[in-house]
Image (spheres, rainbow, N blue to C red):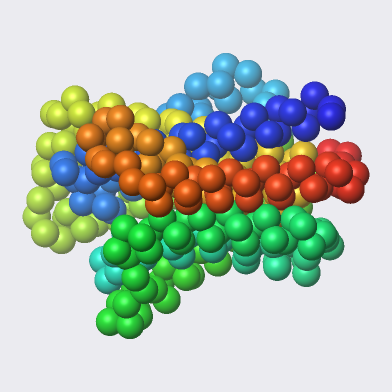
Length: 308
């Protein structure tokens, strides 16, 4: 296995760990700010963090206006549409339903990657992807979660968020050939900043509560949560995911996302004193088997190696 491939696996695992812990920080931050305000702060932190290395070492960016515009579709799918659909979907559906829908992302990515990228998975890999998805769904269903017909609109919005994330993975897989990781991340963060910050400010202006926008900054817990969500969970994960996509097939990268469920579960047990039941362990086993199988059987068949 090449060093770049090993780094890609490390990036994918680190991505899953950061995403898994992000739910803890999101819970804290949402105690102090509305979702749209949190998104504004989140992408402000991302842009500030990204501007430091770019200003310090300008060679990392070769982004002309034309090249920047060509990256707009990537940023529109993720984070813009993904977070928008997810935020409004969660108002009409439960977080458990969102988890079940998000777990299906590897299946959609597998189908899209086959059609648009020509990536082929063998039967064992396909079965492994489904086992990983089944592991997440099993945990959530055993916790008493179910897809309710009453939440149909919310489920449609959550499905749109999953499709947006899937489309982003396919686009990013193509764009990493011609753009650096810094350029991809800058376009994603900056365009999201240009959308969510004005939306937050305009909303407060309409309600005459502009001063309230700054109130959350008085809380240390909120500031630390925003730094984690903005720098690590948004900027960091985008760079990690983009790097992994530059070395591995989109379908192989996507299945690592389900490891985030395992990390979230462990974080809940360790930090929130949540109980651990047998179905957590069985579901975790299925998720890990699915992730390992998807990538092991790719290596066994001499899976495609990226040249870029």
